[in-house]
Length: 369
Image 1: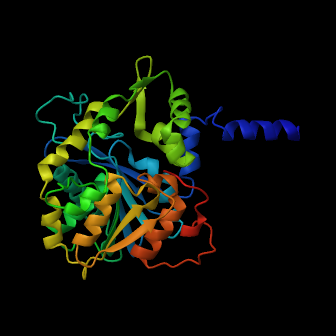
Image 2: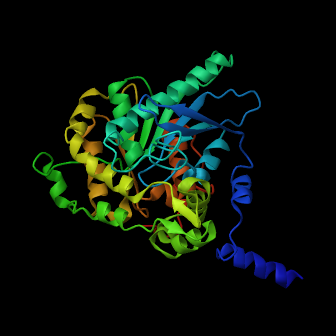
């Protein structure tokens, strides 16, 4: 009997018997009180949002707005959310436009070639502002604004990092502090000669996005396929499960389909050309004495464009701090959520766990590119 139980457990851990979506979600969020809500943007996008509020009276001194990267969904970061809420932080996150359970239309998903589908990087920052304003207004209406969350911090990954920095630059005082992991920027080598030391963008991100397989027969097949591929190598299994089962795919006739259409993902990458002066705008307006900024980078991929951008952004924003995770790559927050969560605690929330604690920066066991 014991041997049979061990074999079943090993089989499940290898991903051959994935848990159902319902059981997976219940397992992932059993510690949190999760409130789901929607925010409608002026251009008709419905953003699917989540408020993780763990205390009985709903009062938190610190809140974190978590912004995910291009191509993913917010519940891919569920292990990071779990880590932060166990430290009694309030976490608000949402599926960015074109991703997860957010929708362009009420009646149907927008065509990816529609001219009125706004995927500019600055629009992602405006969406973040709308979500945060909605949460603050909801707190006020529920009568907890006086004793509610007093300080909001931003944690952004790649595209989410850009959005958090742009929002603070355009609306100073929005955040108490920002931690951006390899924020995405379009930097020309003529303007930023430091970028000559790193790989030049070759369009591979867009090309690879357009090659992604859109449909699978089931959630289980999608999970197994991704686990065997590059995402299985760079993502913690909990992150990968959150991606597949909690928003990265949706049911469709005959199976499941990606919620972030490959063309949408590719167009977001290409739209960086519209914001070539974004870093100059940000560095002139962000005051790190009022809003400390930490730029995190993954040291395992030092020749990549994303690593170089992170280095340049940290140098150009006066007073910004650099935090390098030597064993991580661009998927860092999804690769080692506890290690990254410890950095959020220290740099944003002022919590300093002992380095011997599980989940500290020294808790990364192997390189996750």
